[in-house]
Image (cartoon, rainbow, N blue to C red; front, side, top):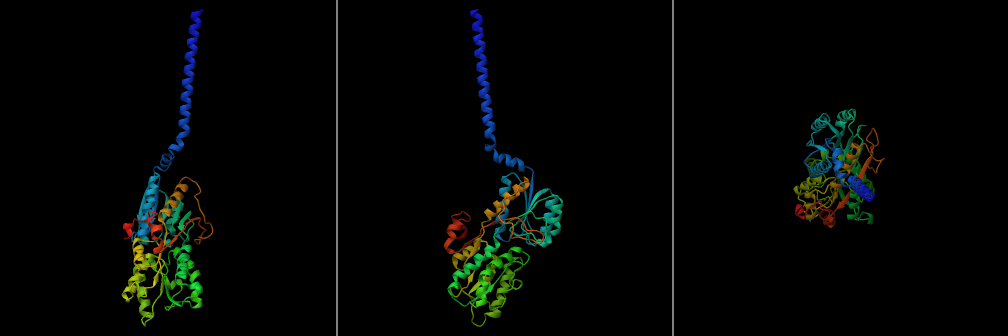
Length: 378
């Protein structure tokens, strides 16, 4: 009997040990399973994106900012596991059409497009829609098409407002100072951003033109007179040369030149130098946009007075989240559903905030933020 009791006790002890081990193993497995999603969230995102191609169509490499935009987007999308087809069309409209056609036939599941001339893309965008490929307009609104899903951009009217208010403050216009001679430049007529920017600037400056505090000696104030096709530096330089020889050859000086883009500003500065203007001696205020390295160097030297900084890292990151959302069938974050009517629909948009750059905040906004190294702009 004692032997039977001893055997029974041994069996019961063994069962309890096995049960405890099983429970411990189960608890450990359960904990690992519960922890796994957080630990491998990035891996899962990469797995979901694996094999998915995104086409990114940029307008040109002739402007430093587009190179940064394209590279930033490509790097971020590839880190998420997407395959990226990044193409630059060098301001050749038909080349961009062909590139987008190839992206569609090459299996792109989403398109990001910074257009050269969006009116030329209507048919190829219709083809994208036919193939159920979502399209995100990047910093240039795609016009006259219902094939665009979302728009990632900066507040382009706000860019113009920053430029206008800078001129207003710098010249003391609110305090009644003046009159000053101003000449006006606008961006490309086929880029909707140019219209928004010009509207923002002129809402600030038009009252001073009307009151005579700002005088446009050339008389060129309408958009179709001041626009610059393809935002061309050469076109801007030629127009500025014509203005100087035609309206400022009798001893009058231009005090302000409203430029909407750093590349245009370079052309304006070259024309002024050709006409005998010297930095520091009746050199006019010259504005700009994009905070290119050359523009920042020119601001430091006095050749350009200000530029508008659009941190393309932020814009690229926002566009990447849009791509990821639409690829996963989700609604991306947007903050504007009213402003951007492309002639077919109001495009849901996300607007990033631009910043005015002068000598006073180069360090804070561009160096301390690691957008540039000091050596880049020395």
